[in-house]
Image: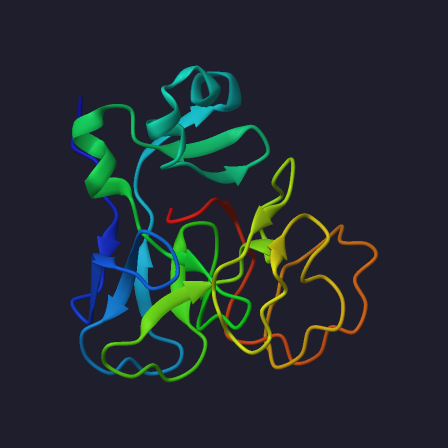
Length: 183
């Protein structure tokens, strides 16, 4: 079986203790807006295969298309595949395609790199938010974060979205993928 791993920019370090949740992805030097900071790796599997995996390996998953997911298949692949990108209601990273994460604004050394799970992850229930930002919504769900969004610009390629209101200045990322905490 081939070795799989995610790519992390040399300007970031993954698995660093996070003030948000568990471990995170942190800038180890300044990163300019638009720079790619990570590319998600893993095996492409269908949904049934992904659901048959142990819960820990399912946690490494991101959905890349309807019924297709990138995931670690073994315990040995888990750490290399994980991105450790935590949620924030005021994110600094967005998805630029299905597997590429790019910085949406300049990021300082020592700053945790975060994304907004509500924009691409549709959990079956709500998840408590612990980001601690001034705009923290308190919960993450399929409906949080989809109204009144401001300060985000340049998203392209989003189709089939309904019920989104107040979206203005969507920034520096392209079509988004689905992920769960710390992916």
